[in-house]
Length: 294
Image (tube, rainbow, N blue to C red; front, side, top):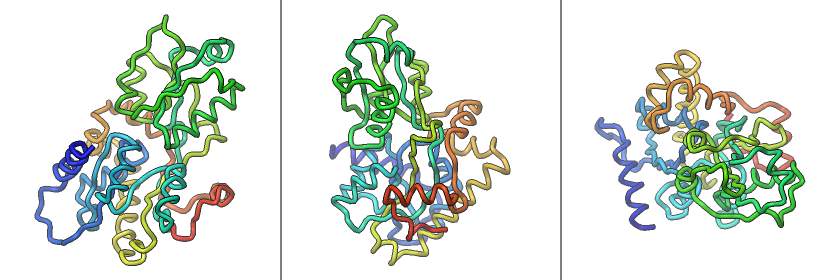
């Protein structure tokens, strides 16, 4: 783990702007590879994060992102509500600061069989996911929606960088994978297809930047600048999506423009406060909103 951590930190330094750093002690934001984070990637590529005195660490998975934060290598991290509630157990001072998106098809359940074949078969289903992440909720949504007995499901804990290496074989036993954009693009090439996603309104997955309330209180200006940089990037996408794509594609492994646009349709960015309906749903799940930057 130590060597992997050092590699990720080194990658963060390589991603840094080449211009002279004129400010000391930047706050470190760790992120994973996810379409919803494209505004932060764009802001980083344009040097806006450096202007906000924020350094970026890019990790390959949700699990790695949490490891970075837990190790103390980052001051704040991005994640869904699932990881927030998990981390709050050991970091009770943790609060959501910037609510930047809602998954709308970007979190995906994939398989090597059709959904009908999986439901009607009596075979054991091998289900691969990142444990202790929102992947678990997605798996539970799918199991409940299809009334599949949990006795038929054999869970395998894997990081996303392991999951994307899996390949489908039409004659193989049933395989179900929980993933998210852009990793699904690789899995499609490996023979898997989508059987469920957060396009289903009941599958609520939101993302935010989280930090300790103490850090937020003592560095409010930096957090507001970070929020402004993300909103500025969202506006840049609306103005010139092709230019936006050219800036962020390296962060996603260089998908085609068509693939990128398809991924963008699977997420709803928030440059303004969430709707009253979504706010009520956040309150109902006891997701705190009082510190969210509006």
